[in-house]
Image 1 (cartoon, one colour):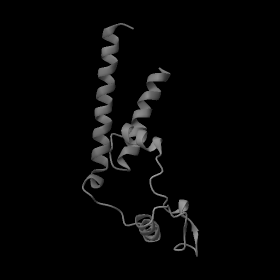
Image 2 (image 1 turned 120 degrees about the vertical axis):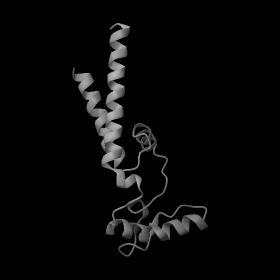
Image 3 (image 1 turned 90 degrees about the horizontal axis):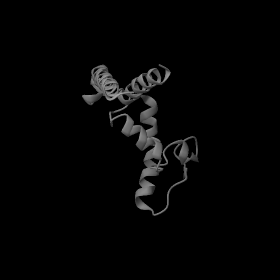
Image 4 (image 1 turned 90 degrees about the vertical axis):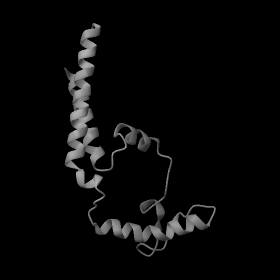
Length: 120
């Protein structure tokens, strides 16, 4: 490939990324305005994880069991805290730190254009 072809493809890719970013932001504008859906499972999660968070704040070790859900259960099913997951940082980088779910559709758009570029 010559430089003109590479430059043309990079410009096309840049335009596609800009369009995808614009569509993601416009479609998920309520997320950027701070609006959230009231979901009963999220409210239950916050209530059940309160015991875990309080314990972790006041003790040096990490709580691995909680008595607040179903008469006791492992905390990894509710809230284990920051596990140091590297993929989550890569996901945030690729998604341009957009709030969820806007980053999901943006990453889907990016991989869509990537697959078309590879399969061409």
